[in-house]
Image 1 (cartoon, rainbow, N blue to C red):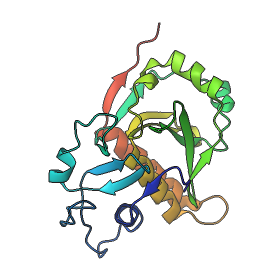
Image 2: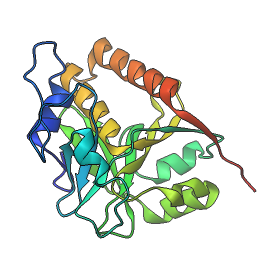
Image 3: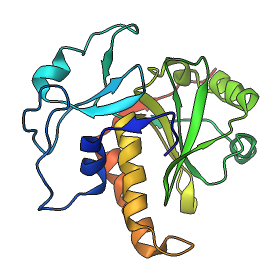
Length: 212
């Protein structure tokens, strides 16, 4: 994973070790035991994603950009009517058709990442191409820095576009890292990717984008 973002050991275990007998998880702030489904926080100073109990997470639900922690939202939005051509996608200079875009607090522009067998890899993003994409899809200007990402899946004929919590992007990366086999990934990883996006679609709020 790029050094730009980090996962706490707690989060890393949660996303990679999805097994019935995995050790219990604990809040990274107060160290109380956690339920399987629990909130996550972004530590602004180093972009580390932390596990949290509800009591700790609620303290940071309404913090401003100068706070120490920022609660990562739980809800994703499926973007219907998202406009991007094949040429515009190519102009973003991504090596694969699966990526997420997030703006860190310390920067005024987004960074692109793509999941790989080695984790999340940062990709050089053509900022002019991104600016054009935002002009055609103004919802991208409303992404909350650090905790929300544009998540795109254009693999195998799919056209999935979501505003997703950053921890969901890491969950996808963990699935790929765990299931990847050989040079092409194997059937298991593509099945896992498809199931991930189907599940994200089912629990997402639909957001129809109005274009001028």
